[in-house]
Length: 507
Image (cartoon, rainbow, N blue to C red):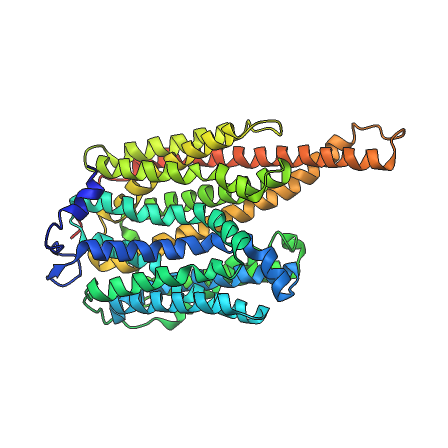
């Protein structure tokens, strides 16, 4: 039996365990299996919702009578609200107690999900998606912090394996589940599906999760506002950059300036304020800082690939949405298998070796993707996706363990919040970058290919057919360029693993 199973089995007949010392949670018997189950439900809830609504946008657009630009705010409002609120999670949990914030977050996310499904107009659903992002921001970082606290150090690896399954499988399965719900029922069910999961998570946490000790830290208003404005402006710029043709748009220029100035103000304020919003001591831990570089990269590769593969299959190769989802699903299976295996390997094999293997497999899978062509079958997509999912799974678990293995427990709330913020920013930058390069490279390659075509003797239908084929080939070449760029980025950071130290028990 895997160590993941042993964690729950060891809770045994009484389903309770004495809590490991020095964790920040009061010494008392804990129903660890119920806490773990409830936390995983909450984690999956938020991770799933990061992508499940994307495929339902065309149906929402018809039902709510919105333009393409307006419908983008259904996604943008959620993303920006969550990005701004994630850094606040650590302070809120420390000031008011982790249990209280967790329960409020689950309840708020569940209620706002129901209201999204009941929305009758575009302003309504944008507003409720904003509330969904605000309330859901705390779920993933707090779930990670709780799993660290309720498990002794020797079980941190398996605990992070379980947590990682929820975090990484959600975005992979979201489009598949969202497409099925939209086709079989309606777009409203991509939100209604959250309600029963949210209720189960809330009841389980209310019955089992103890409160943590409160930290009476003053709230740094200026620090939070400067960071929130910087993150919000950056996220808005990344989300709308491709649509607005980047810096040829005054809107994007303003957002870039606001993000830069606000971030500068935040840095200066943090280094000079006696009680800053984000404590500089958090970044004195080398493992934590280096791990944030790697989680940023994983965010880029995981989400950028997820943003590229489905439209490539549907637009360039003519796959139906359901078939596209089935072909990409093995990526999630690879991630889950790797995380279950690596949970048993942590503590027996150097975590840095495991991470190096995972990142090498990820780079290899991206190299395989550079060989895609329009005439290939499903097998290359399935195999490369399975390998990439396995590689990311191998890297994710030891990374999460190393990031907090040397970090003091007093930094755990804000540490997990910042760690997950970096993953989100990485995904936003990765998606924005590959989509921009895809658009521009498609245009460049199309122009180059078109110069070699002699069209004087062709009819208009023949010209249209030829242009379609040229554009299809140009887009495919642009996809391959994106895969190559991500392969190089992944390979380049592997040597940084030497900066990580083997985890020791945090004080």
